[in-house]
Length: 458
Image 1 (cartoon, one colour):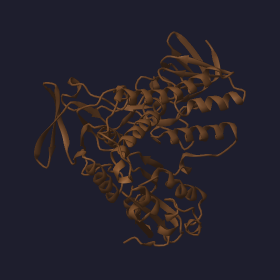
Image 2 (image 1 turned 60 degrees about the vertical axis):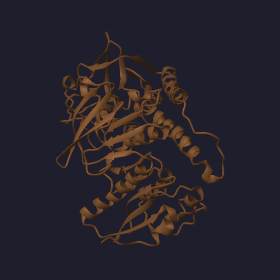
Image 3 (image 1 turned 90 degrees about the vertical axis):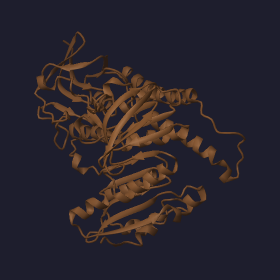
Image 4 (image 1 turned 135 degrees about the vertical axis):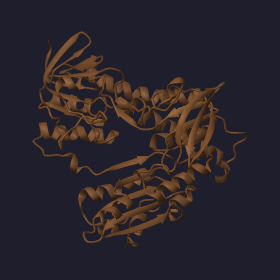
């Protein structure tokens, strides 16, 4: 039985970086990957989808070329095979880089196959049995498939299988009006598909504030995306060469006919076939591994990092999990999950950058707060670019002057949000940013301007 100081299960965003740190510390490490090196981000998430977003943006901008004084003769057409080839090349480069870095890392042995825990110290990969005192689980997640009548009897895509699409769906129906579903909706609408989004909640991206949800809906509606909100899917079936989705809303049932179906109704962890019970590892009702503030499971010597622990669903949170574990194990640090500030982005165009608390959460907390907003049409950089959709909003605690949260829906919102995020990590008052002199013309320069107009949250 091969013996290691540490075994890492999964080569997503936490695993490879942790392997390098452990090897550098003199440890003998094994890393097990059953499918694609790089995890969701590199293969079916961030990298390929944002490559598709870029292609869709190019098509959208080309159609608007006349607004900028640019003449393009004839209609804008999409070569979906070329779009997919570009996406695949970008994704493959990243995947191969991760795989190569691990397979050439002295002190690290790579095993390709499915890991199955036998005890708290041992696991199998095929016919091999490996042992280590420390085990790190980084197995990620996958699309959740809801128990909708008829769904298993029709062909459908998930975010993963959509990566194989090299054609233009005539009419794409998307179940789920949250982050993944909306990105694909705008991508394929800009490619030329008819798109219908069916969402159970009364509004899109329901975790966001109502004004943000409304603005995103207006942006998508203006591009011709059909939005069916407050609609529960009750059945799916094939009708000839089409897929029929029956949904109920306010006591009325409607039928949507499309050529293709994408299911984007949440995620689930890849823990059901890992053998957690044999190692005695606790998981919650949804299968997420239970961890403490330093990512330790209930079993000494076993940690869970990334999407499988339910404490973050992003590449950046997975990488931060690695930083927390490495700091505590190797640097005598005291880093904790509770130090992390929630931040993420929705990569529609324009993007939504989010950090901290929403307005609704601030109101529910009962804190005395100040708030300021600014429409993107008042931002000179956005006006010059002809991209004025969206708005900015920031919330500040009145008594401490600490920033509580912000939403930036608009040009470069996914980048601009970091000016606020970094200030929140520094734990300095908003007046520090208020007095900063930013470069003109940028979107960021209007954050101090917005902060000068804070008003009590009523």
